[in-house]
Image (cartoon, rainbow over all chains, first blue to last red):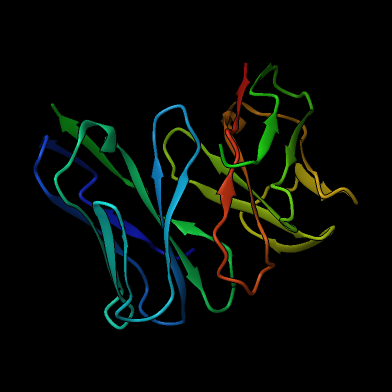
Length: 113
Length: 115
């Protein structure tokens, strides 16, 4: 079983604050890294798929970076809004198992109005 | 709405019973994946089908089986149910198979409660 860790486990920020969290994964045999946003009582929603070292992706106020050599990805949210409150999951895929996702346990973000 | 549908939304049953969960992928997607989320664990990959064939297996118990039909919908069968099988079961779909990096689109999940 591959170890994918996310930190912090939970985060409370004030509306307007910028924040970031980390996904750590094995640095060898990297295939791809996916980020998802999961709101309570809904299904996980895809944010980004990242495949190359140094990749940077952006969607509105959310962006992500990838470092495959050291085995981590950062997700940034600029100017957090209450609607950003959700659990953010990363899913690592390994070269030996292709598109089989190994999920981290997530970072739960609460944005306080 | 991801375009992936799952039925039923909730299922309550007793230990020892058998249940079937159903998933319809997004139009055009050939791969279906099943995931389990128990109370104290993250999302765990169970099994993947691509165009009707089993392509990858994760931590799926022998009491569990799945199949994908010619119309590409998939069913997950859980038998001899135990209390510990209570979980949220998600289905996801993607266009490509095992050796793609395609986004997986998740359905709304089926909440299984075993009493």
